Length: 376
Image (cartoon, rainbow, N blue to C red; front, side, top):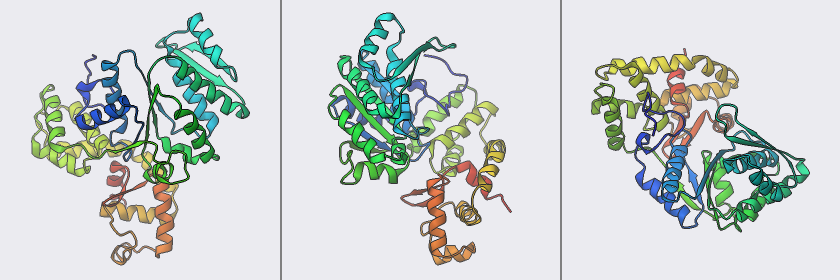
């Protein structure tokens, strides 16, 4: 295991030593997969679902060394063809070798597309790229699944931001195609994770959709504050930093328990290395983070319409809005009528500026929210 310079990771996954809590969620996810149940995992972005998946895969692989655990994020894909290219590169690039025997085995299955095998110039790990015409998409996908089934190995595959397929032009056809292959692959176990709850619900909860009630549901929320504090306190102590419960509670509450933003703050505090974590230190870290992202926030903000800007600023100032069309809220911020607000909030949610939690509407990016309240 690597010893990290800063134990508060904000990207990637190292090992359970740098992963806080979620023991019940890890075991629940691992147990479902081990017992042949595919899982739909949902949470707002940056709540920790990717870390949970990788922590679960770490456990599964330690218990089943022969199993193959694969993770792919399809957020950047816009079509079935792009999905298959990414899926194929992840699956076929995991062979760990570019030996002639391996290449011949792959080519005996994958015949509908051109494959280019290469080695990563930095790591030396094998890489695969696929090239095929859109008309060959279904045949190529079938061949990849055939390869997986006949490999004789057990695969655990996570497809992150799975709701992206709902944005494809032929989304329902894609859903049906994937479902038709997945349901006949007993050695493949899937996690379909996503952050846009309305799109994920459309895929998995609506009758008439191919994935309707085909998986076990899991939702993850904020980390337990006591558990998170003990984790953070012990890591800070390795750098000679005293983190009181009161100071941690202020950070936790400032960001509503949202994992990534708290982790970012802890990462900064660890870097600054104060003897004690005071309110002044907390404020200094917040200012440093917001200032470093200010230009990105400005560029994003000016792309919004005036109605969207006005509504976003109002939500930021309120922190949480229960009734977006409430008269008191509308009058307080001089907003236009309900129809204008509904159009604006729909756009802000779709663009991921705002997220609708059970308790109300909130600005998605917690640091952007702090920047928005400083605007004149």
